[in-house]
Length: 431
Image 1 (cartoon, helix red, strand yellow):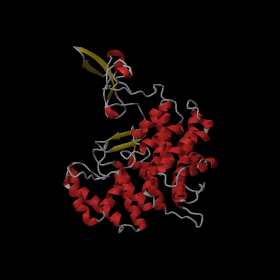
Image 2 (cartoon, one colour):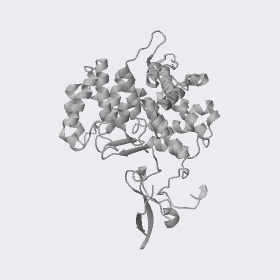
Image 3 (cartoon, helix red, strand yellow):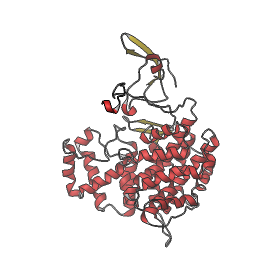
Image 4 (cartoon, one colour):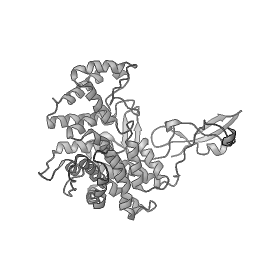
């Protein structure tokens, strides 16, 4: 990273100053304005930080215009087809894909950390049965630091590594427990002879009264959902994890903060909104009318699950999720299900209608992932929990990268103050 290029800022009355322009390995250049305030006494103003690089990173790269998503340089479509989730976890955490020996060691460590402390399991009983699973997730993940305080020295690489293993390994158990608690079923403990995703599905859906069997097609579908959601550059929840971590907070607290941010409907709740939209439409015969209303700017109707804030072209994850969606519907014989027929009809119209094609409002990953999760039997209230499970490894990788960066500082955004200027206090009897 570096460049001899300069950017000149003109300000005040004929004043100007030069700043270095930095170039990454790929993507837009950035103007390094770290000395702006010290040299000029002014700040920049960028609500939402849409034009501000808050950090340098080697983990994930997105080109929204070209529809590109890279994990450590690898295209997401190659990883999702050729890797399982734990291979992708290894890649995000370590920077390279594992060889066979490295993968076996990594899988072995994760597998043997899937149990949670029994007292942590009892923590669930402190929540109401009708609590939203994400509320439970925030509390339980945040509480991990009370059970694993033997590895909270963030300046110790060994402690950071064991915390990373614990979080990746225990999130499936924690999510499954949140679901079981919400439906009043007994917790199902993990089994070391199952794969990461098969183990999670068993903990979610097995009951003590019968043996649980899962289709490899369904395991692969959920595994792919995990891969496609593992990281996504400096989004709201990832930035939240980094900002919390910049204060020196422990990794469990930082991941809990990420879960809180992801819980927001503008971030992690998109696939839930897609299914709610389908329920609102109700029937295939009403799709045409709904599309007509969606085109009317004054109707207040939005076509959920189409288009993306980042991707101005086709979301590269959506194509993979579409294939997975049809594989799952075929495996379960659900192509004639009312809601799935409705989704496929909506997809067909949106892909062919000139209004949506011209505006590049293609189906995004959330449109398909919600359909797949519903087909797998995952309730809508658990969708964002599944997202949290998948994104945890990305959050950890980003947190570790920040902690080990010699340039990292505690986050401290500036503001444009628009309140009342200084004024003098007046006693109450004189007001």
